[in-house]
Length: 429
Image (cartoon, rainbow, N blue to C red):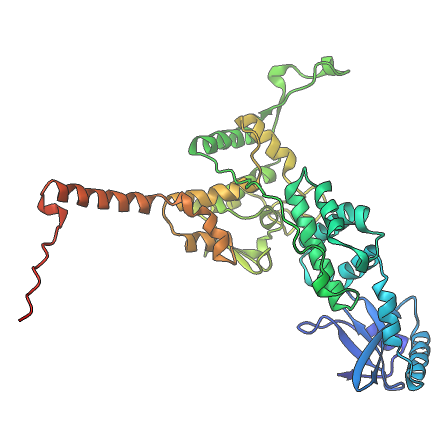
């Protein structure tokens, strides 16, 4: 437990050090019970800790910045004085917290629980769900007063987007659990419990060999002759557009390479876009990602994938494989080039993530085994890979052929049926 006189200099120098608890404390040597903690997000908060009725209790004083160490120490001294006179500041604070709104608790939840512990994409998604769906309907309500009917209204409001409705309920459930740990609400009173979730339709799309051939041809054209593009003839200026025979556009070679790598590796979009040359080991045929959705992950490179990498130039000052428009940055997304490729290939409703599903489906169809496919995709749970089990038909086909041939031979009285004659049981003497 770190102890030092709390001053502006010592608080400014206080940093969160991994590994360790989410809150890391510095306790004052000048006033017993006065302290400050820091989060992984670098947010620092002053606290006062004391014992009352034999129990240790802690009260937040406020954040560093708006409060100086001297102001926070003075408030801590006032709280400790009240405790000495038999008052219970912690109970009073709990009563005030119980009246906090959903907005106030959501702000604390995002700052103290989500941002220090989740990955950037998850933080962004949680914040988006809170800001767009939870705050407009529930934000001004007092957290402890919410009932199951309020959450049912939220679900009904999102009925046209069932997947998002289920996500919003899950996020609110996590928010309530955080509020319960902080003492704002009763954990057993969670209004999300008992609300039935919408049935979600799986959006998995597996490309056929013929569709992959069309994508391959579109990618070839995108790098050579260019992809055709259409124009709205009714708009002003349409008459000044190039002739239809000349309406072709060559795509950015890095975008084309990224699409090829997604097809050939089964990797996630951000894993390819954010990959760096320093992570590539061509001798082993692997891109070693220091972090991904499931932690550290190797992306295994086939000979075709290695050929794609070999065709790309390295841009000075940019460490990323798929170079973006800004200096030193990776490409932000592939929405426009992928739409152009799909249009040229005559494909509708195919998402970039479907390339990952297709990679897995070809592995399952070749009977490579779900554990191997899971390793290639970087799944942390076998249950995630199990969705492709129905595509692995080859072992079942061999099994049914073997069983069918054996039964058929037996029925025809052939020895190949491998029918074993059973011995007559001996009579007991």
